[in-house]
Length: 149
Image (spheres, rainbow, N blue to C red):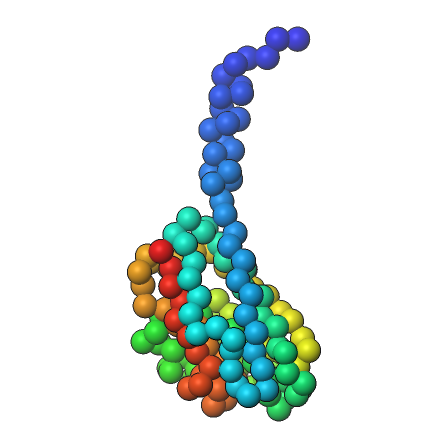
């Protein structure tokens, strides 16, 4: 049976967007001293999505010293953190839905790991982004710059 060469050309064109998709992994740790081990995360513009893995290397439970990883535009960080305080641990101290929250993990306690995968389509190259922990009172110490581009 002879295959039409146009079929193969069409298949290559259809697969092209998938061939250029790139997931960029990021690993970050949080501890019982309200600190991340990174102050800056750089993600290249060629990344179509990012997978952030957060590991809580401390020993305290989520109720006492829980941590998460939240991404927002830097000017929105304080407002997002403050809006989440009343939402409680069950809601990861985030008032959702909130368009200002670009990505987030759940709150975890010592010894636990969580991750989030998100598209970079909403990010602008060179935009002003920050990551932070939304557990009440943590964001002031637990934050860093997220650089895309």
